[in-house]
Image: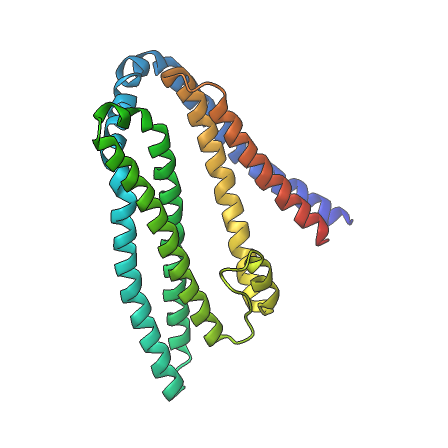
Length: 261
């Protein structure tokens, strides 16, 4: 390595180091301020927030997944029907390639909202299980709540799978090179293997962006777990779970990076 490159590296480190020091100072000040007011926060938020949160979840949990899934189904039908119509017109005219980009954009939106619906469905089904002790206090009504939670979860999964099936199949119509069925356990692997280099590059860029976002989120959640231990007696398990997710993401990403070098 030439002296010029070494000097450039040192100059770049020196320039970035100033911002790094400022960030560390801000973090220390924020940490000191949080620790200083933690006693007052515990008096204000220590009991009221958990009670309010449990009260809200107890009321909405049995019905959220059903309502949300029905809304997603209606929205998805409208978007998919419009997208299908645009593609059929494109096949007849075949004179505007920009339409294909808009169609694929709509399909990506459909995949996004169904993925969100699935995650929310799992969340509220888990909450329903945790809050089952609260349902038992209501006598016969607890059976209705448990039944609604279960139906909502099943509706969420089935609707998401069927919508994703339609999206994937239409995507395969647009690009016949793409392979894989949504019902196949190895769908993701087959799908990526069938993609061309341009699509793979988009997937890899998106994956790296997701990696960065999850890393930042894990830091924020770790801080929240530390604060929550003092305010709401979280215990160590939430921090353990965040750390496991953080480690799995980092190690899996690093191993794949090493394999590709």
